[in-house]
Length: 351
Image 1 (cartoon, helix red, strand yellow):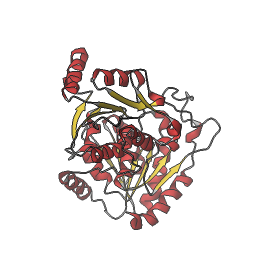
Image 2 (cartoon, rainbow, N blue to C red):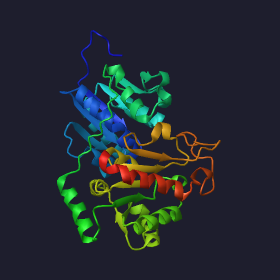
Image 3 (cartoon, rainbow, N blue to C red):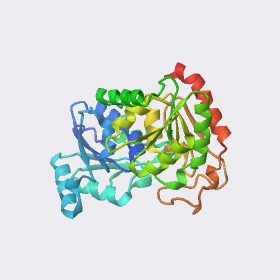
Image 4 (cartoon, rainbow, N blue to C red):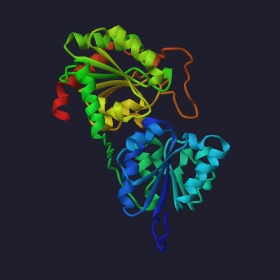
């Protein structure tokens, strides 16, 4: 805790680890920090540039990316540390989940006197470890809890994602050029960071065929590394299935997701984005634990198999199954389709 006789910090460094999903789950904490230090200097360091798309138009943060070409190699890392130290951070906060050693080294090299982390992910480099029942909480609330030692208490889940107007116009052009009816657009994301989290392709195809037979248009989303997967799903669906491959600028993807009535996805960063944008979202969960890392928003449907061995994924444990698909993803299409159709009926009143 900050001692009473000391001034509250005015320069704070926040480390966000992982990918898009982890960044979305850190946004409420970043926004709470912005409100809590209205005149302070806030620096956020992320692992890849795509994550910073979620802070587009937000000028409250000094933004740095670990995987930037500028910071590649040993000399590049020294340059990153130099840039961080130039911000003169008094406090460093490492969000959850995080790599214990790397986050600790970066925190101590930043020069900040106060270094805060979750007790689960802490190392001896941190001098404040947030304890208690936070280990059982969702990552969103555990991140918010990291601000308590700085006397900032908030349970407000505000994502504040701003999609620039030019990307919204691009999304409208995509819909127009594809002759896509804007009344019933369903978004699919059949990908995920790990294959063991992916519901089988044929399941997405079956649901896509059913939805297009009902007059829906299905846009299949994916990154460049998922292009073949997206192509396979679109080809399987046939007419009414459209491909969209995003790039490192996430804003184009966000703008098009925002045009969807429903978004069906595996446990992925795009599922978190859709939910944070207010799109009704159905998420198929496999080995990960929805109690700690599901999209945290209204109008979300989570589907998983309650089997004895799951959820088996933990950052230090990885997956127990070495075959595909794992038993936890043996979820019938009828069950998922029912959730999608129910949300379609209610989504207009919710958004």
